Length: 404
Image 1 (cartoon, one colour):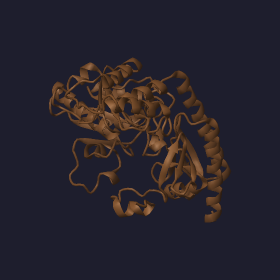
Image 2 (cartoon, rainbow, N blue to C red):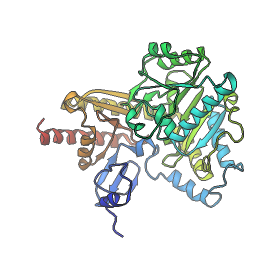
Image 3 (cartoon, rainbow, N blue to C red):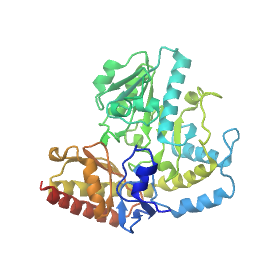
Image 4 (cartoon, rainbow, N blue to C red):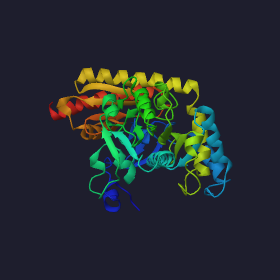
């Protein structure tokens, strides 16, 4: 059976528009397509492959664990899921954990938990969730509604109510909006899909104070910023603010599907038996691998390396912006960086992404105006520098072709 890019159009839902080739294999920070072309990958599966493609650590653990226990459901406890919970207890200030399969599920569970907590303690009137314009929290109907981008939630019928969207990085707007009906404020430490926009200094602390003043919870969506991506194990550490609930996923599994909700024992107690669940959540095969990933990415030397390489990436992009005139700003934290296109190239992020692929480098977008870069956390400095060279060459060629 011959598989080509056209096969996608003949078999798959048209929800995606993949690039014009088929990936056949990958290793580390390299990817190869069905024509044997090699690419340096600065996407890491959208910030998922924290240790690169097909790391030996995961391959070894998968083989070993697949011969012991694949799945048993949450009717039973298993040592592999509990080991991951213990590892997170040792590395974070959180006391209780709930495992799921994705970031959307982690955020969904976090939102449900916040509402249940408020319902139990203060009554059914306390159900408002405040989030922010341009935010993104997942594709379930609840999370896509809480996310502040109408394009993802319109056209699917009535949306869940009691959700308020406010401008990001604007504490005064939040102060004016909260009330005794507010049960939670949900925020990304760095807005991802919204354009790689970091929280302003003092913003998360201010949100926490505002939330707690009305007995509301602060939920941090660390699906993309968590698990070493910003140079700290979790991005809230940069601000010194500990959220009431943290949701994460992506890099925790190093390429395998897992998410987690973290909170205190007091808050977790409001999810009693039967209130929430997941058939595959906490799967022993995936949790065994996540333990190994977590141990690796939480090493101080490893996290220091992320910070150093994040600086190389940001500085390299800034230089490219000056040489080409294509970027008006580079922003982000660690190995999550965004290059904001200059006004002349506004709306062309997807087009530029596709034009860079033939030059052997794969990147992401964050909306139509921002190029997003989220390489493997263990990408080598030399590979990162080579990728930057390819980006600059590709952009110069883009300018020539389009005579800009």
